[in-house]
Amino acid sequence: MIDWELNEEQQAIQDAARKFAQSEIAPLARDVDLGDLDFPEPLLGKMAAQGYFGMGIGQEHGGLGLDTLSMGLVTEQFCHASLAMGSILQRNWLCGHILQTFGTPAQKARWLPGMSSGADQSCTSGTEPEAGSDAANIKTTARLDGAHYVVNGSKQYMHDGLSNTANLSFRRYRGTAFGADGALPNRYFTELQVTPIKSYTYAPTGDQGTQFFY
Image (tube, rainbow, N blue to C red; front, side, top):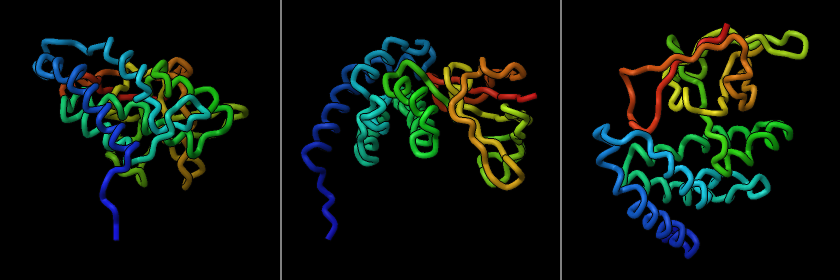
């Protein structure tokens, strides 16, 4: 028989997230949704101080190392207070999880501590104009040229695609495999153009962008 009850640690995590959301997020929610308040930057610092950006990242990299259920409990409380600001949590979770699972030791050492602390805000670029979110049909390619990769293609609807400091992008490598170069700041690409998308957003606290590789 499955036990659906939360354990004491999970209850404590849920209670702390509810208290934080109601005291720090809920008072800002209406103004953010109406566009009367720009992105509340001070909130990022408060979230980072509680370790929320590194919940799913291992303790060896400065994170809390929480399980998926615990992260879901926090997200539920944040989004109950404000879907827009609750979505901020996804910035480092997906990119951090991919790097933690598949990244090289050097990539993990370079990026995971910053993602855990909130110093680095990341985005993951997968959606493309022709493929949408169908990862099996992405067209962007990566070709090894000496010690570097030559990337050609574009990504679309990148949430936080303009404001991130780290960007993990998926490409097709050698025809069949998918290559992700780890999180590389946009400034590392000399031939990269990122343009904003003004007509679409599900969260006023995030920006949308299109990314072009040449």
